[in-house]
Image (cartoon, rainbow, N blue to C red; front, side, top):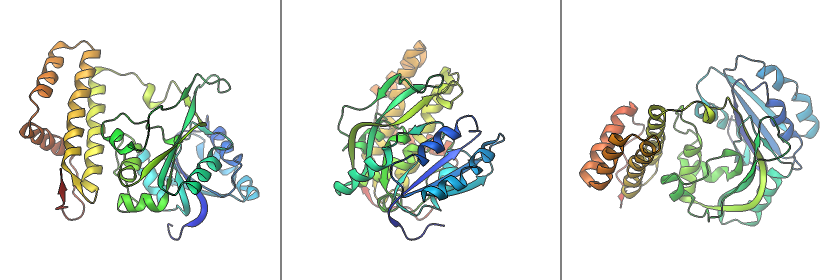
Length: 323
């Protein structure tokens, strides 16, 4: 369980669900890192295929490399719950949380560790990557990069313009704990990256490495590639907004302006989605909401979303407000 951090150690927390078809590629990319101080924590989220069998065969390989391997099994609860489970076992000074269907380039860990060691002013760092088609992981389809400064990563998360690919980030674990007020992140089936990045990016600046350090594999069966319709897209927007609100409510100091921005982005995203699907009645509805945006309207929207969340507030209500 979590305790004293080992200096220089990089803890890697990765949820896996029915990953037997590609988990070998991912684990071998960890074993082949040119950085040896690694602790890999694999959380099996209730897989019903041979994921566990595939993982078990690597125990001796990790021992030979002097790396740590922690295997955890849980009933299916989703990636965010799996991340929470894995965070309890983190021993590293640094933390990353790649997806099990992707892979890291050989110098991925060392490059990010070196950057954070040489740039103490940053609490986290992100890098570029390559996108691959699942049928050809040797020739990238394109480079995944950002030409913008990521010093203001928090603002980009609030307005949903940030790159949320988990493979590209590394955080200082102590900064993560301090910013998150503990280890647990908000559990949602909608994902885990906003919860992982939003608190620490509010308190710390994010560095940027303009080099591809990971491969993201686009799979036909992945969650992001599943069939979409207008209803599912609007639901997805609300799920993301609920995650953002939960994170904001957990922060030490609640920022009213950020909540207003989150709720405004919710309506704007729904307007753009209805525009894409050609639904003129919804376009008009969301356009008028944006046009008539007032504090009272925002308060009503906030109350409506909170009621839908059906959550139990943890801890005492924070009384610090800042506009």
